[in-house]
Length: 360
Image 1 (tube, one colour):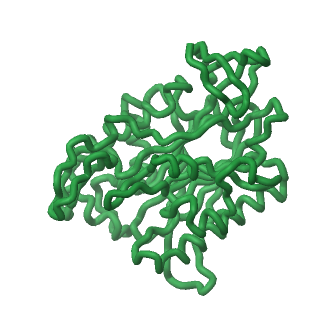
Image 2 (cartoon, rainbow, N blue to C red):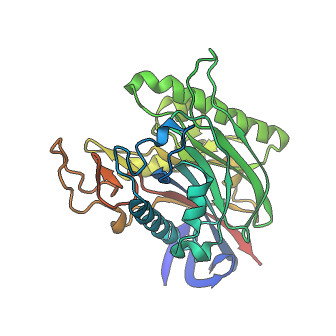
Image 3 (cartoon, helix red, strand yellow):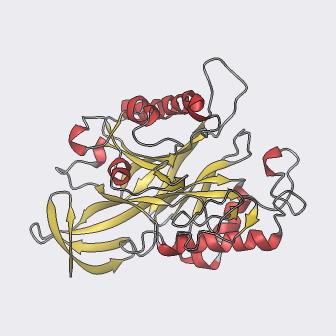
């Protein structure tokens, strides 16, 4: 049997599965725990093939568009993404992620097409999605297994700037519900891109202000609210938007009451990343937790560990050179390289966390 360490307690993992997740027995405490997984995945331009006249962002993704986005390519993309999602978290949760945040989806239809794929049939996902006024015509959404997470409410928080400029980006999605018989809140976001380089940082800092407002509002109603924020932030954990505006800490020991912990920070420092650019790794895809999920003095739901899901099938093993003669070997295996369809997955790896709760 493999030994794993959960915070400061050694446990033996006997691979005992149940409908709610994987159970393992604590040797010192003689407890069983159930494992729950929550993940986030940027699906990289999951567009259907229909030309939506109200969405200029989908013009490339039509049969006559620049990318020649045909029904055949769309079906291959759906198949690939469904297979990738079906593999996430299976090592410790036989049903996969109970909750999955997604980004870069065009509309609800593409999600309905996705969850109907055979590879995802046993995940029983339902959808929370709202159309937002993003310039590229893409949204965020939450997929969830209703047997394990029961939605009680949802709403969106629009992106806006103090100067009321015309810039538009994705709404941030808040979904509240019951997991393991406890109230848990999920926030899903896709902060503004890095287009324009460092000059665009103020946009992500503005998005972080919105996220911080949502978290503060939840904690004002319940100081011990269990909050999980996930998304493609287009910034690393050490950037101002995350480190300063959100005030998400790298170390558990630095998180005060009501504070936030960012487990992705240490993963990045150890060499992991969720996407690569010009030979370097970034951790733009992050899952951040409220301090209430770190408590050891409770029999409630709490954080166990985080990881980047970067299995070999998601990695570009060949690294074919594009027009710029730059190899992508070792990078996420994406759908297109410089306009050429290569039948991959996404330019991002999924990220996930595991939560545990004693099972008596």
